[in-house]
Amino acid sequence: MIKFICYPKCTTCQRAQKWLDDNKIEYEFRDIKLDNPSLDELTEWHGKSGLPVKKFFNTSGLLYKSLDLKNKLPSMSGDEMLRLLASDGMLVKRPLLVGDDFVLVGFKEAEWREKIQADTFSPAKASS
Image (spheres, rainbow, N blue to C red):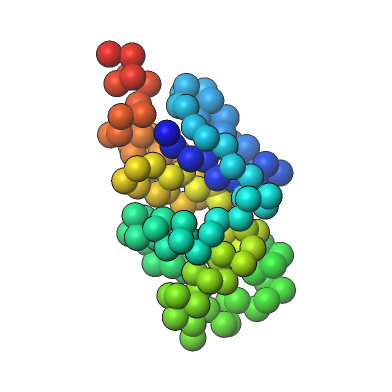
């Protein structure tokens, strides 16, 4: 089952959840603030995503700004960045959509639609 990892107060997460519900996509809900992703999870998700680690940071978040990460990340290794992300869920860009063989970071409807329709979680495939 797809994991939907988000912060419920985030409007982008709310839009993404509504999209999932409207499209009858089954998912496991996880509040990123209450259940922070572990280092192992983040390492696995980073590998599945094909994205640079920097793309996993919530660059508009207050914590990101207060830690001055804009200036610190360029000198950090990938492992250091993953450890930092694992220290607080509010540093992680959301929502995250985690499937068996993919991870989507942030909500881009076209990207989500394409990935889910190509996957076994598609409502069209599920009903056939």
